[in-house]
Image 1 (cartoon, rainbow, N blue to C red):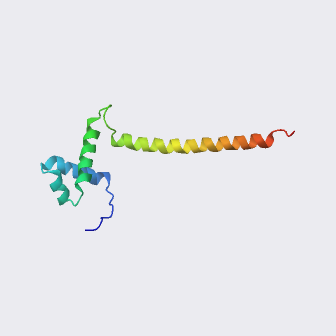
Image 2 (cartoon, one colour):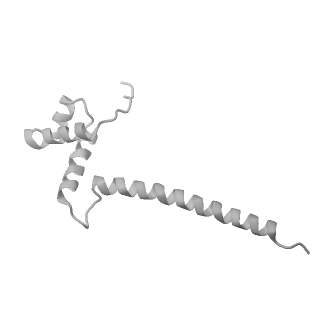
Image 3 (cartoon, rainbow, N blue to C red):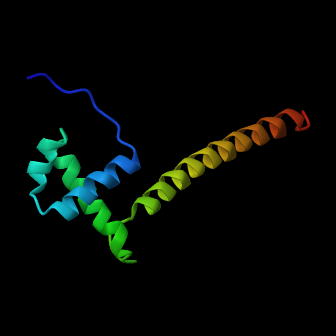
Length: 101
């Protein structure tokens, strides 16, 4: 059996699958087979749903917190690159305008 192409699921699709797990009473493995999902993916979705519902400030990151962290990391990388560029530009212009001896 070959490797399956990676599929992307919308948050609504994930929420629907989690709801089926929570309401059906069937094992996750059985539901994953019925929905043609990997057991690991479905198990991770259920675990993340429980984390999101718990809102424990000292617990693992919720989905919203993960998204915010990713955004903040992107912003930090951009600002760091801008700062480094400005440092190099300032050094270049300071060297260029320095009086010659």
